[in-house]
Image (cartoon, rainbow, N blue to C red; front, side, top):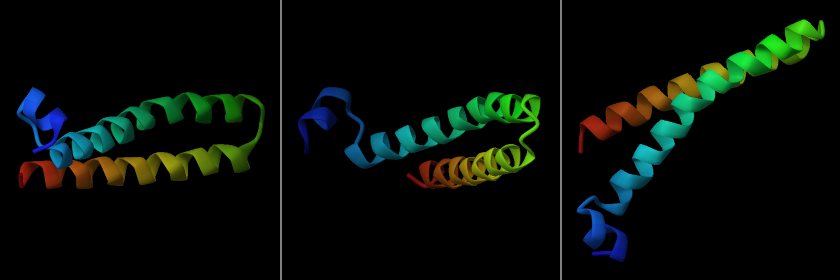
Length: 71
């Protein structure tokens, strides 16, 4: 048992997975602003890139959520 697990009662693996979920979910919101900025500058290529990253983070968040539900 790690020090963090002893202090919180949460395994390190679950804590790490929760962190991945949080950051992926948060990223989806942040990328919306990046898309808006790129479109405001007329850079469709960059806006499309940010949409792809946003989609990847949404998939990552869903997978992390599923894995958390199994633990």
